[in-house]
Length: 405
Image 1 (cartoon, one colour):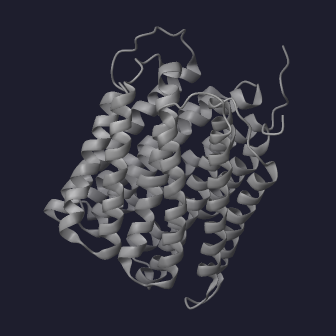
Image 2 (image 1 turned 135 degrees about the vertical axis):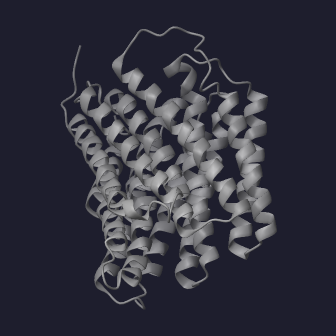
């Protein structure tokens, strides 16, 4: 019972951050740029950094931490070593978000960004320690997914440190290295870990070969290490190589996990499982699209808009869609209740898909689509609506009383 409620504050904190801060800021950025508001460029640059921070540490960071605190002990038939430390990791990361948010009202030279980064680095280290100890305390044999968990923990810590470094150094490369560490290092490795452990059970897929999974673990993270180093140090020649290596490793992972293969086991039809299947397959289609955009951008030349298309294909298309699908499937299990509404779950998913297709397509074809820029602004509102519907559904599920047989 001790662990049963640990995750809730993380999920609720994630929801509050994206609905009140990260999401609205993203909409404001789009509207200010594409409606050509006076001074939008300077205004949007500050908001862009805050938007990214709230989404990386708030929406993605807190959500993944909460899910990890609940599922990792159950995967390993273990217990977290300290609920107090888990709570402390929440206070540190959430406290960092609050401190960083104060920058909305203060001048650029404020040192709040660095203080916020220190708090979040300490939160990431605490989280890493708790999850590492949880896995190590298990008496079960090692499982293939564990390597991805360890990689995610390392990348969360590295990403937090790079975030701190980026607040002290104006170099854009350091900031890009931080973002890549959080997205392709921390979030993607944790998604891969959960996928390896649960896809055969949830979707009836054939179990992947352990040796293939281990090879992908090493090759993928070697590519991410090289790419983060190339971004931080401005090594453009190495950067192109790492883009290719990352793409190969991720395509190999999708193939090895049999995501698009016919299930080996016919599972009984369940609406929640159908939503998860649509979310997972849709998320990996978005990941493949992101990889193609990434290759194009780095070899044929990219713009600010193409960079935006790539980032939103990864963050909204891949990572957020995966969060939508898994949360809809597993949070009711956490609570021992039914999902509040399967119709709302599907509505949130379709809004997310529609909003992100508009965003990515219109950004990819700038300036040819410049006349449609008001629609690009609308895409942000549609995506925010998807987060709102999803959040409402999950929040009401979490506050349901436990159901007894």
